[in-house]
Amino acid sequence: MIGAWEVILYTFIGVSLGTVTGLIPGIHVNTMIPFFYILNPSFETCIVIVALMVTHTFLDFIPSTLLGIPDETTALTVLPAHRMLLEGRGLEAIKLTAVGSLGSMLVSFLIFYPVYIVMPKIYNFLDPRMGYFLILISAVLILTEKGIKIIYSLFVYFLSGILGYIILNSHILPEDQKLFPVFTGLFGLSVLFFGLKNKSSFPVQPLDFKLLIPRIDILKSVIKGSLAGMFVAFFPGLGNAQATVLVQIIKLKKRMYDNRAFITACSGVNTSNAIFSLLALYTIKKPRSGAIIAIQKIMEIDRGTLLIFLSVILISSGIAVFLNLYFGKLGIYLIQKLPYRKLCFLIFFFLIILIFFFTGFIGLIVLFTSLAIGILPHILGIKKSHCMGVLLFPIILHYL
Image 1 (cartoon, rainbow, N blue to C red):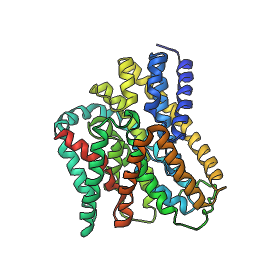
Image 2 (cartoon, helix red, strand yellow):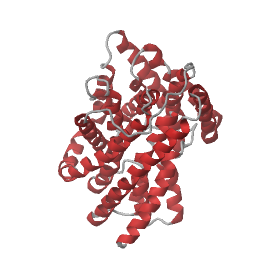
Image 3 (cartoon, one colour):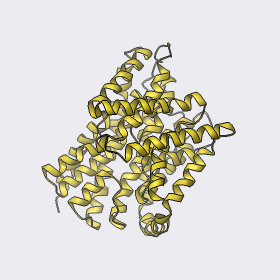
Image 4 (tube, rainbow, N blue to C red):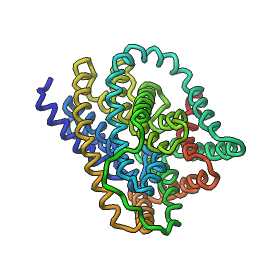
C-alpha cells in the first residue's frame, strides 16, 4: 500500500488528465485507457484512472454548453444549456453542472452504505427483467407527449433506434468512436442547424455565478441525479444516457427554472455513477464503464482499496469544482468575442472536420444521417429525448 502523499500526487495526475479529456471534444475517458495498459498497470495507475474519471464528469459539460458538442453523457443537456446560453445565462448553466456534480457526490456518499447493503438483492431481482424495465422506460418517455405527438415520438424513437442498432452491431466505425458522430448529429448539429438561421447577435453573458433556481429544487435535482447514477452503476443495459432519460421522465412540473433543474440533475448522474460503479465492482463484480473495466483488469478491489478510491473521489471533486468554474468563466469570456451566427457556422464546420478526423468518410455519412433524424423533433414539436431510442432500442433487442 502506498503513502498518503503518493495518493495525492497520483490524484493530481488524474485530475490533470481529466481536465484534458473533459475540455477537448472527441476525447473521452476511454480514449486514455489503452495508454494505462501500456505504461504501468498498477495500484497507482488505478488512482489516476479514478481521479481522471471523476474530473471528466465535472468538465465535460463545458464544451457541451458553449459549443453544442455532446457525447452520450451530455447529449440531452445540450438543448437546455443552449437555451440558457441564448438567454445570457451561459455561466449559470455551467455552474449548475458543478453544483449538480458536487451535490450528487455528497448525496452518494451519504447513501453509500445503505446502497451497499440492499443493492445486490435488488440487482438479482431486476437483472433478468432488464429488457422489460427498459421497455417501460421507453413507453413512459413516449407517453409524456399527447395526441398525434405520440405517433411522432414513436416514429423518431424507432428511426433513431434503427440507426443505433446498425451502428452498434457493425464494425463500420472505430469501437471507441461509434457514438461520437451519432450524438453529434442527433443533439449537436441539429441544435446549431436552427441557430444558423438566427441573425441576432450573441447575447451578453454576465460573468456572475448567481443561480436563478430555488435551493429546494437544486436539492431535488441533486437527489434525482444521484439515484439515477446509482441505477446506472448496478444494472446492465442502463448507461448515463439512459439515466438522463429517467431524469427527463421524472423532472419537475414545468416552471421557468425547469431547464436549470434538468441540467443540475443530469450533471449529477455522471458523478454519482462514478462512485457507485466502484461499489458495483466491489459488491457484484460487475464493471459498468471502460474505466472500471480497466481497474478490474489491473487489480482486485478490497475494502482498503475501495476506501482509498473514495478518498481520491473526494479530493478530485473538490479540485474539479474550481476547474469547472474557472474554465467555464474563461470560455464564456472568449466565446463572446465572435458574433453568434458566425460562431454557429464556425462550430458547425468544426464539428464536421472533427468527425472526419476521428471517423473518416463513414463517420460523415453517419453524422448527416443522425442530423436528418435530429432535426425532426424541432420540426414536429416533440421532445429531443425521443432520439435516445438510438441506445434504448438496440439494448432492448439485446436483452429480449
